[in-house]
Length: 282
Length: 133
Length: 100
Image (cartoon, rainbow over the protein chains, first blue to last red):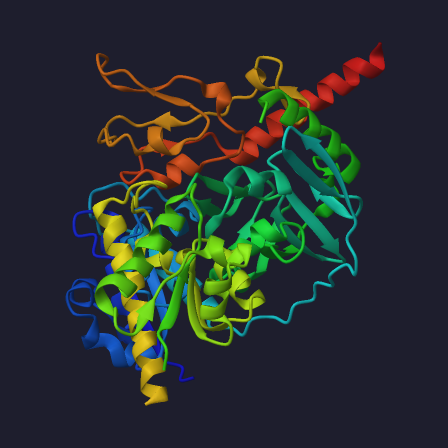
């Protein structure tokens, strides 16, 4: 696969974030290895970009949470290799974008930060250092016609029903059986970006069914090392195997000892879940 | 070559089951009536002789509403040859955010999606017939 | 529901709920339809129509509605700050318990 990168910025004409998307895309397009894709033309006539999209990998730049560029790529069924949200990057720099388009000291700062983020993606993905447990045993309880299962050992939970399984300095994060049963058939998994650094209780992407969207609240703090890409085509794995095959994110820990203080072990979570289910009267 | 059997699942609670059935009916009733026919999955499961005779050793295409793959599994277990199997959620990404309807009615978007699923099967049927001829 | 707790702290002692910036809100009501916990309510006769009716129904640390808001009109309290406050209450209660 060539090193060609296709860049698709959003079109936000009237907002600061959209203006910044455009600036970043133009900067990137100065390189010979980057092809710039106009979102309006792409929408009008996808075939114009068919060749380059096949030859290169696609980086999408969204100005804000409306995520027009990502949505357009999704509608056209384009595989997105990397996604950047300009507003999110600005937040990490403590810069408030506002609505007015401006050109001041903040502008190059945000553009630089977004470019750095884009460049960090081209690094090779690390080999997974996570060692899965051989056999996971479960305890279960029933409430009405539902049966909920929780692993017997080696998993930790936060009260947002997300689990973490530890293997040295690496962990995997996922959702509990309770979540997948509540959501019913999961249709989409929106993972976080590889390389994202986050604190305990930050959001690590989301999963969606026809019933609702569930935000993954991280049980730990650390850096995203890998995401379960198999869930793109088979999101039902989260329903079928929420604690094993349906893992969502792989993380390198930053301070598990601190994190653990606010987590529950399997036995404690089992009791908490029992009480929760009884209160809600599923 | 006898007609290709195109079989949807029976899922009655959710819109996916309805999408599966309507898309298959478009194929067998409108788009490829000479090359395809559909049959009732429940008859496959109860082992109705006539229906089992129609699928044993025969080429079939299944359209399931979800990952339980009821149609695919039942046809395979009865000895049918599942040449192509699909589930409605496979193509959902392009339709994210749309309202498709309920277990008993389809919205305009739902009908469009059903047609899209039907077209996917039509292409496969053409390919299968092409190989045979 | 006033008996419900989050991480050992009574839910009504934790400040976590959506804040709506009505200069940005365009009345689309996507948030109301989206939230499965009935946090929002619409009052057709009020101005503004949108209201955070049940702030304590809001799942602590969830910000899903703000991700869904097109005009970015929804914000939440700072997560690390909220974590700190929860930790502080837990510590105080633990100390109070060991004092007895």
